[in-house]
Image (tube, rainbow, N blue to C red; front, side, top):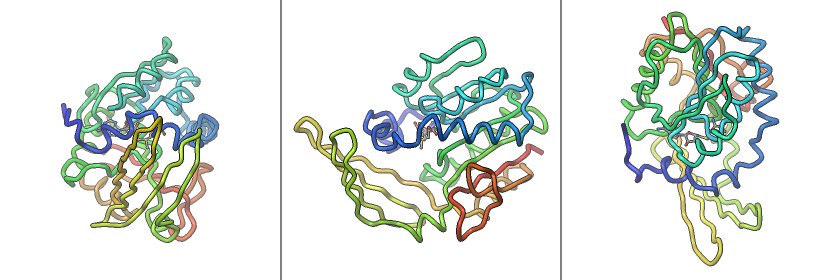
Length: 246
Ligand SMILES: C[S@@+](CC[C@H](N)C(=O)[O-])C[C@H]1O[C@@H](n2cnc3c(N)ncnc32)[C@H](O)[C@@H]1O
């Protein structure tokens, strides 16, 4: 297990302030996306699903409503604690690092949603994550990766922005360094100053397709938004790849 608490994603995503800043990425958004995905994938109740890096479980909760056994895992203990309040016979959550295998040869579908990829400094860790997913999938299993459209992220980047949410004024600074988008998040709460960082690799469609091919997946489809219309580099909000284990 990678338990280095100094990695940015182990601290920021485990804080309540992450959930406050991203509160607009809520259950409604998740439910609409999962409705589209479920219809497109033709999910069956006999399928076994994994929401990898599930956060508080907004997608896993929706997925489980179709009756298939659904697991959600995440590195953040606080998020998993919240998610576990929704557990039932079809839905289980656990703390787990996505670079490691959770259950071997077990899942029909693995979902990695809302830019939960490209966090690791070492390129080998991104590949390790894809290899672990490969090992967790049953033969011909399906992986769905929902990443940002890095082209649009760069085009529309606002270098400085202040956002007041829940009585907290977040100062956000974004820059591109070494192929990563770095977001610095500064704010004060109850007289205490906080500073966090997000760092995500600006992977292109071609980068992710290459990584998928290198780790033995076949790319089946690429969509550009949560309504699952086709990906266009200039206009797509998202980069959603559907790949099959080969
Ligand atoms: C942008 S959030 C998305 C969460 C969730 N998929 C959603 O849509 O609400 C990224 C998630 O990845 C998780 N994460 C980051 N590094 C991880 C790792 N190494 N293993 C498992 N989860 C990780 C974070 O804790 C966080 O919950």
